[in-house]
Amino acid sequence: MRRAAAVSLIIPARNGKFLADIFEIADLLLTDADDLVQKGYGWMLKVAANKHEQEVFEYVMKHKSLMPRTALRYAIEKMPADLKARAMEK
Image 1 (cartoon, rainbow, N blue to C red):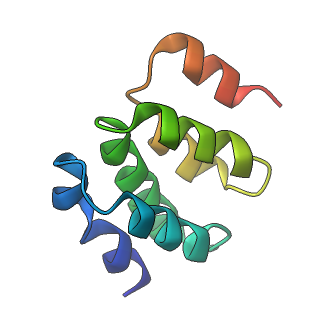
Image 2: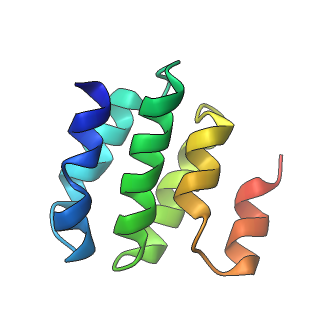
Image 3: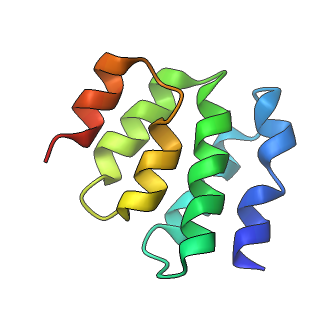
Protein backbone atom coordinates (compact mmCIF):
# COMPACT_ATOMS: atom_id res chain seq x y z
CA MET A 1 0.00 0.00 0.00
CA ARG A 2 2.87 2.41 0.73
CA ARG A 3 4.40 1.80 -2.69
CA ALA A 4 0.98 2.03 -4.35
CA ALA A 5 0.48 5.50 -2.85
CA ALA A 6 3.46 6.69 -4.87
CA VAL A 7 2.97 4.62 -8.01
CA SER A 8 -0.68 5.65 -8.33
CA LEU A 9 0.45 9.22 -9.03
CA ILE A 10 2.80 8.36 -11.89
CA ILE A 11 0.26 8.87 -14.68
CA PRO A 12 -0.97 12.24 -13.33
CA ALA A 13 2.67 13.23 -12.76
CA ARG A 14 3.36 12.66 -16.47
CA ASN A 15 0.84 15.40 -17.14
CA GLY A 16 2.38 17.74 -14.57
CA LYS A 17 -0.44 17.34 -12.06
CA PHE A 18 -0.53 16.93 -8.27
CA LEU A 19 3.01 18.14 -7.55
CA ALA A 20 2.13 19.15 -3.98
CA ASP A 21 0.62 15.70 -3.36
CA ILE A 22 3.70 14.05 -4.88
CA PHE A 23 5.98 15.90 -2.48
CA GLU A 24 3.68 15.13 0.45
CA ILE A 25 3.74 11.40 -0.30
CA ALA A 26 7.50 11.50 -0.85
CA ASP A 27 7.83 13.17 2.58
CA LEU A 28 5.79 10.38 4.19
CA LEU A 29 7.85 7.66 2.51
CA LEU A 30 11.21 9.45 2.72
CA THR A 31 12.86 7.10 5.22
CA ASP A 32 10.92 3.93 4.46
CA ALA A 33 13.23 0.92 4.71
CA ASP A 34 11.45 -1.18 2.06
CA ASP A 35 13.41 -1.28 -1.20
CA LEU A 36 10.28 -1.44 -3.36
CA VAL A 37 8.78 1.57 -1.61
CA GLN A 38 12.00 3.51 -2.22
CA LYS A 39 11.91 2.55 -5.90
CA GLY A 40 8.23 3.50 -6.11
CA TYR A 41 8.56 7.01 -4.76
CA GLY A 42 11.82 7.55 -6.61
CA TRP A 43 10.02 6.60 -9.82
CA MET A 44 7.19 9.00 -8.94
CA LEU A 45 9.69 11.83 -8.46
CA LYS A 46 11.49 10.95 -11.71
CA VAL A 47 8.26 11.18 -13.69
CA ALA A 48 7.27 14.42 -11.94
CA ALA A 49 10.65 15.86 -12.92
CA ASN A 50 9.72 15.59 -16.59
CA LYS A 51 7.38 18.59 -16.16
CA HIS A 52 8.79 20.09 -12.94
CA GLU A 53 12.53 19.44 -13.12
CA GLN A 54 13.68 22.38 -11.00
CA GLU A 55 11.12 21.76 -8.23
CA VAL A 56 11.98 18.06 -8.03
CA PHE A 57 15.70 18.83 -8.09
CA GLU A 58 15.26 21.30 -5.22
CA TYR A 59 13.26 18.68 -3.30
CA VAL A 60 15.98 16.07 -3.83
CA MET A 61 18.72 18.48 -2.76
CA LYS A 62 16.80 19.44 0.36
CA HIS A 63 16.19 15.82 1.38
CA LYS A 64 19.18 13.93 -0.01
CA SER A 65 20.80 13.52 3.41
CA LEU A 66 17.79 11.47 4.57
CA MET A 67 16.73 9.94 1.26
CA PRO A 68 17.92 6.37 0.69
CA ARG A 69 20.34 6.03 -2.22
CA THR A 70 17.88 3.84 -4.15
CA ALA A 71 15.18 6.51 -4.15
CA LEU A 72 17.68 9.26 -4.91
CA ARG A 73 19.11 7.46 -7.94
CA TYR A 74 15.64 6.73 -9.32
CA ALA A 75 14.52 10.34 -8.81
CA ILE A 76 17.47 11.86 -10.68
CA GLU A 77 17.83 9.17 -13.36
CA LYS A 78 16.57 11.29 -16.29
CA MET A 79 17.95 14.64 -15.14
CA PRO A 80 20.77 16.38 -17.02
CA ALA A 81 24.29 15.21 -16.12
CA ASP A 82 25.18 18.40 -14.24
CA LEU A 83 22.14 18.15 -11.96
CA LYS A 84 22.75 14.43 -11.40
CA ALA A 85 26.36 15.11 -10.41
CA ARG A 86 25.29 17.81 -7.94
CA ALA A 87 22.65 15.53 -6.42
CA MET A 88 25.13 12.66 -6.01
CA GLU A 89 27.72 14.77 -4.18
CA LYS A 90 28.06 13.97 -0.51
